[in-house]
Image (cartoon, rainbow, N blue to C red; front, side, top):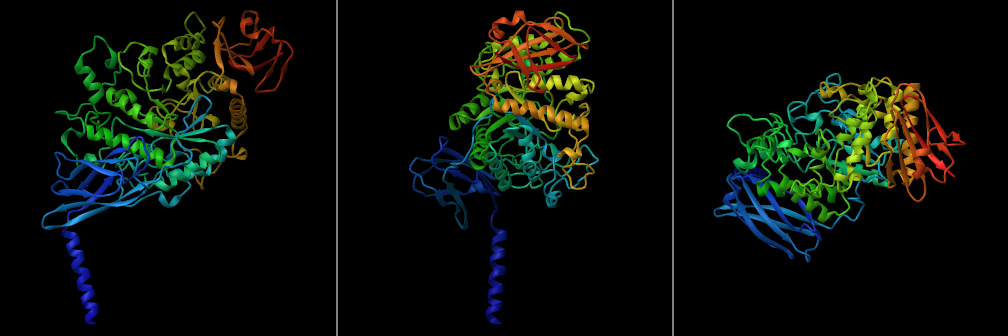
Length: 616
């Protein structure tokens, strides 16, 4: 009995001492790897009064370079050099203060991930964009997580969470592969612990943790592995420009300049022209780049050197940990240009094959080109950004199929003119081309729910230059205008057990949906199996009478695409295309498999894009 009393007293005593000790809340990154190009890392350490302590550590091959206290005494930034001689293992980092008990953190160095990673997503791929909360609920146990700021789950609300998760994506990878998809882009899945509309993920509150309502870090890696096993790839959506107002570094800032501060709330003016305008006012540019995206999305001060390393290291960490193959960069135009260029160099040095494309929701070809690498439009600055989301081609295909008439500069000629401006890019094939996404109206609605126009646009999408992307539900003719955005973020029917229909199966789709699904699958499969649509050259001809003709060709094949932008059938003669048709006399329709015994004239139905494989 005395022994038990003694043990209990000891335990209570230890608990009391533990409660009195300063709390070492976290160190990030929590681990690193040996043999990295990026071997000088900076740890961000957070804990009550941690800056009052000295730092010691000893491990062969690891050098403690410097310890940086900052404005907030709850932070230390520690510079380490993981030299080439360092081996995988663990070592203690000791935080000491005279008269108080040491705080000890065990740091881990891992062997490099030798699995598949950083493959790059290229013009050989077809991207499928998913908003996980609205795609499929594979694990109902994580629908609501106690202690988080938002615990509602209401599928009939466009602003609340619906329960989709990473497991739901994993469960339907075979569906995506069957469709012809080779790469999956998820909107952000790191923790977004905000009290309202946290489903979209663009107001992160963690950099190194998957939102528990989506799964876990381990499950995210399982997704990457499952994709790689199927010969597919994973794109991670990154947000440099802003974080959520509940991000742990925002709630307790390392310094006032961690975020851009204004006397009163100042929102960005959203005018990208201020970035490169030779006559622009500095005040306008500052509001563009330093103004907040929204009240719950603080604009991060990317000139802060500690923030720069914190952001960059987290992105390298996800590639090495999970095997990410490419990055999509949100709100690219609003970032600090110098930081993003340095970030791009760092990422490409570590992973030379990785692909990177930035969101540039702008109007005007030079406006878009100005954000791509190479300084090709004399901006006087190299952004180091390989590719962009090609909004100029989105506007062009929309106009091509919605124009009231095909005139000198309206209708299908918009496609011709836009592509003719590709000379401004270092490499336009790195751009991502698309018909819609989570921020713009569904294309099926844009073209008035006209199925013929829809198929014509999809045929163009999968046969033009660049990296094609389709938004979840494109294959089902999902519709709605982005007014508000939630209307284009509806659930994929069949992703929830209680759904009355399952659109993932032919039986759950109606005849029109199956027809469209099969049409898209036929094109995507052909594209996946034929290099001519992946890396082949493009040649286009000036449109005539509302008909736009272009070719993709390489040493193996030549394809002729004919887009009829008119509301009536037409027949064209092909003599003027002799530069590309010479030596060919017939063709096969890629979609219908119909044989055309002669290509001297070709009949093209209204609002149709024919895809013809030329034969000798």
